[in-house]
Every structure is written in structure tokens, then in C-alpha cells.
Length: 446
Ligand SMILES: N=C(N)NCCC[C@H](NC(=O)CCC(=O)O)C(=O)O
Image (tube, rainbow, N blue to C red; front, side):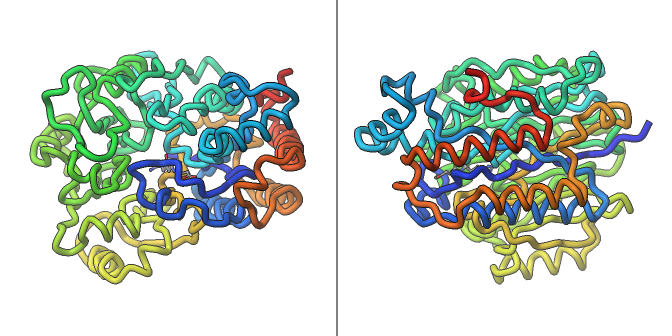
């Protein structure tokens, strides 16, 4: 049976804004308080999805979350009507209020970890929503993420959904942003690489000193157990703590893998040779390509600014392996010349396509952050909610929907109005009908 790797991108929500919420994420902090353009952000995301679909890729859409999140604010003691809650919170606790308004669920690489059925003991595709405990604005995502994933992958003959890990820093889990999979063909048994920032239960081992390690080894191991991965097919590697301290808050900011390729920066891992050995041993005899980018060609700051590694490494239906990169890689001299050199050298990577996802980039979210990879065989693909799969009709419908509901300018003060809340809820209500998701949002469940 044929298997493909689908990409499910997060549709940017109507509240997309720059609130400087992510300590350790340089772009988020440096663009705090900038005026955002949610309409442009959503349209940029849709353009990328459509372009990948036009390249022959299977492209899905993951709906955004309901924001402002009035329910979290109520849990924190704000009372009255929804409007009262928003006004009180925005005045009395502006930072908490903004955290409850983030459109951060757009970065679906952090939505969940997904293991294809070829890797799991029960031959089902396993999903564990990420608990995202390290940042409050993200820690309020996993329950609705789980609802949306179940609405897209509902058939329990094929799909197995787990509860997110316990909500504690010891089990901090950021999902697929710290997970990549290697295989020969997508339908073959693969090797899943889990990358962590620290050991939660042993604080004598290396860990970053300045910025937080958002993912723990213990969280990675728990996900591998839940997904029933076979012995030897999960590899665990520690991220270099020094690069976390320089703004590499997820492994997908410094490394990306696909099939028999790992594309990574020289400084990505704490112990590069052990990481390579472990992957090589698990992968077996077939040739594997470690494409290591040396610091003298691309410095760490250039890698972080351009998001060279937050690129999608995909196989087109023709078999060609290509990079989907943000425009920032074309604009950065060192990175662009490295990529030109890479294409001229003898690796499986044959082309680079550049996309404008600037609205997302300014919050530290590149092309790879915006997508969740899901390997599916023909039967599983047929069981996916087809209203979430990109095609000409869905593209046109979603463009019209965005143009109808989204603002092209949003500041913190706009977010506290009842008008904005009503606008967002009516947009999401219409979206659940377009995508036939059912009542996934709290405002639809009251
Ligand atoms: N690397 C991956 N896979 N994802 C990128 C996530 C970016 C996100 N930024 C934010 O949440 C910023 C929101 C703000 O500041 O308004 C984060 O730090 O979690």
C-alpha cells in the first residue's frame, strides 16, 4: 500500500498579534508590541499551503483556537459577562490578558507528536498533543488541539489519540518541533528522533543556563512509550544547551530531517558523534546523509535569524527532495550562498522554494513551525476529514472567509473589545461548518 507524508498547517487565527510572550525566542521578544496584520498572516499561510498542494503534496489545514480565551481568564478569578472579564483582565493583568489572546496555535509543529502506523506496535497512527507547559499562552492549547485532531482523524480503527502529558515542567513537551523521523519509504518502519533540552529528574547533567529548555528527556520517553514504538526505533538526543541559550528554543530551529537525510547545524547537538552513531545504528545498512552546516559558513545568529533549519524538507511526488524556506534565507547573504553551494553539491536535496511567511516569522515561526507532519497510507488518508484537505475549492473558500472576518491591523487595545470577541467567534463558528469539525470550541459547547 502507498504511504505519503501529509503536512497539516495551522490556519492563523484572527487574533494574531505580537505580545513578546516567548522568553528565549528572540523574534518574539524583539517584535513585542509591533502592530500585526492577521489578515495578511492568514493569507500568507494559505498561499504556502496551496503552493505545496499544487506541487502534488497532500496538504491539510488545522483550525485555529478560540481567542481571547475567556475561560482561562475566568479560572484566574475574572468574573462577570465576557466583556467584563476582558476589560478587567486587560486593565488589572495586561500580561496575562495578552497571553490569553495569542494566536500561537498556528505553529502546529507544536500541536502534537505523531507516530506513523509503520512504527507502532498496534499499527495505528498515534497522536499526543503537546502540553507546552513552559509558556502560559501555549499551555492553554492542548485540550482544544486534541478536540481538533480528533475531528480530523476520527476513525479509531486507524487513529489513536492520547491525552497530553502531565502539565508540569518535568514533562514539558513541545511536540513535533523536537521530533523527526527517518525512513526509506514513508510506509516503511522508521526511526524516530526525539530531541530534548534537559533531564528533568537529574539536575547535575548539562542544561541551558539562560533560556529555558522547553522539552525534557522524560517527556520524550513518555511519548515513545505511549506510541508503542518498537525497541531500538526511538533515538533520544540532547540539544546543545549553549544554542538554547542563544535563542534556539526548539530543535526545529537548528535541524530538520526527512527520509534518509538529517540537515543540521554543527552546534545543534550536545554530542554530535553519538547522535550520528545512534541514528546510523537504528537506521541500518542503507546509506544515510548527515548534512552538517559548519559554523564558519553559517554562524549561529544567521541560522536563527534566517531560519535556515526551520525549513520543510519534503519529497515531491517526483521523488525529488526539496527545501521549503522562508524568504529570509534568500535575503541573508551567508545563508543564500550556502544554499546555492548545497544545491551544487552531491546530496539528495535538489531545489529550494522560498515563501513569504513574514507575519509568522516575526513571532519566531518559520515554514516548519507552521506544519504538522502526518504519514498516512491510502486507507488512513481516505479516513481523514476531507474538508480539511487543501484543494482549489477549499483555498478559495478560506481566502473568502479570511477576507470577510479578519482585520488588517491589530494592536493590544483592540483585543479587549466585545466587538473583537464576537467577530472572532462568528469567524470560527463559520469555519467549523466549512471544515465540518463539529463543536470543537468552548463557546460552542455552552
Ligand atoms: N519552532 C516551532 N516549531 N514553533 C515556533 C513557535 C513560536 C512561538 N512564538 C510565540 O508564541 C510568540 C507569541 C508572541 O510573542 O506574541 C513560541 O515561542 O512557542
